[in-house]
Length: 484
Image (cartoon, rainbow, N blue to C red; front, side):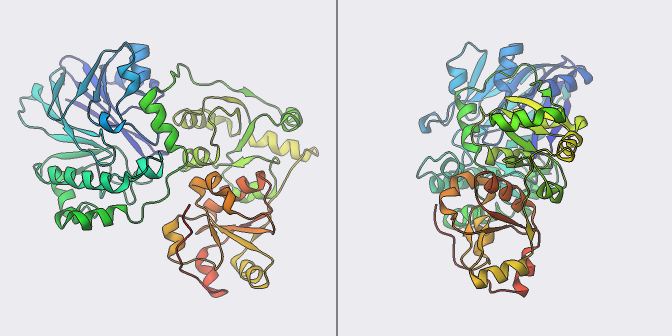
């Protein structure tokens, strides 16, 4: 049996290429939308991808299942569970595809590899895990389970997203109870089974995912902190799994809708045109594009950037930042990006639905534009000592862009809590009457939030400091943030 785990470090997402080396047929489980990456790996391994399976309707990236079906006519294996809750794969039901809709216990084969569907709802109503049996190697029992967003290394998939991200009211607790029932099924699995999760550390689909790419059922039974309360009581489990979940990025609701109703076919990657320094003025004057500055040095951005541009450094959080701060995926985008990282940025963006990437320029061209007198803006940096003074004399407001759980554990008195992952949704709670100090824990999240607020007319100061330093200069409050 051929087995390849394929990792996207920005989305902390795992796809799986599993193939029969005798028949040279393979399946891809949970592919992202730019499917050429998987086709290249399949060719390298001398197998042909003939099928795609989905564990669930994803919230954090666009699925490549439709892309495979439209372009290559592959077979689809999708969940038939969850339809009563409105989470069937509408796009596949309404299209002319070679699709099999699976119920709990159904099996199918790709070459000599058998896959057994196991309905594991909770993270989503339709969620399937897949037990994998290498019949070609003589096995009669599964060697592993692709758990999708059900069981991660050290965590479970969060059950609140339908309510907190997709805005389906009243789903948090019932979903958590379903997840409890799925956990009981997991306890019945043999300890030797390998666990192949859908995400690793850094994903917003859980709250404490481990960085180890694989595990075993036995290990997770012993040491998974989110699974442990399921041995106690359903009430204890529900309370534990729902507490401390971070605010989901704003784009999750859009991903759920596309993945349910139909991801637009991508085809080739976008090919934006390159701009010279002499074209910047025209772009700024027209104001038709959202400019995303991906420079890694946030202090450099704060000193000088194009007025109205957003800041999204091309790091692990790039998808989350853009998806959270650019609510309309039809907005034309211009990137400030190094040439050797342009394709990386484009792939990151199309994976979350931003296809209208119309232009790009290098940071060197940007600096040349500034050197020649081009329009520029800046955001002043302050420390927590200055914040404490400004709060004491009433000259500064404070915006805390950490998650609500962080805010509740200690914050500047009177600070407005507005997580950076949902900042546009929280804008109406942020006052415009005075200068605002924008902070997080270390200054990283605050940099992207300060840039967004400045672009939307707020008078901001970026707190380039670590929050524990505030304790030296001011009182810390612990009241809960106001409900949204």
